[in-house]
Length: 344
Image (cartoon, rainbow, N blue to C red; front, side):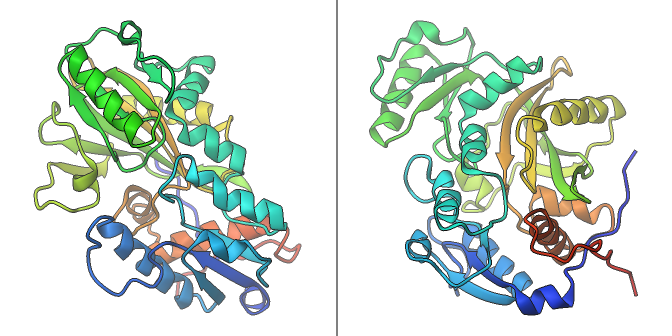
């Protein structure tokens, strides 16, 4: 059963009083698809437009350098998640901590925990959740292929990446060795696990009244369950899209995905917003933990916005709710309750 709630509205006094810095790599992008980042640039410009539409005292930046000095702002809204180096997701929150500036999203150590796929799977195991067996190959350590779980086909990917960047399929151990060596050369630790033909189940979570609020669960349904989605497809850099995102209408799966997400999120609170991802085995119907994506993509065409729309929220209302709740968590709003948005 889907829970319905009203979105939150940021008080007008807070909009006038608070200086908010929005940091995103493509905040000044004026074109369409970026040649390498694809729709990520479109996403950043859309987010800028949404925040400007709220009437905020908004300050724009496109790099970490904005926080090397002490900027004259009260709060940072960071979308600079892919900095081009290992564990870059942690740097902007760390810079905010160094300057004592409150910011949207999870703390640096929680960002690091969630972005490390190996450690996140360790959390899942400790929490009693099913997850596919895996092997980890850190840079500089020997590549011991005997660690790989047996499988007819393996997935090889960077241990800390987003949007399936660098992912590939391996049909034998020599394929695995070559893929691991390639990613090591590019500066990544590597995780290897069996490929499970099926679909992804995504549980998006925000914060309401200081508590986690689960939005309607979605399924990323593959046209071919044996197809491996790639970075180019997720960033819309190729024409063909072989999947569709829709509400999950199987009650058994929805309840189980929600249960597993609730168990996992206990390890990561507070995080303001995020997505917990699971893999549905098309042959057996089994559901297993895949990864955590704290501070996930907020673009209007991605899962969290689609889920919010299913309870009647616009994209702008989703973003304003997330921002308002985080400001409230950091003590930057008046003590009285943040008002709900009332429909006209």
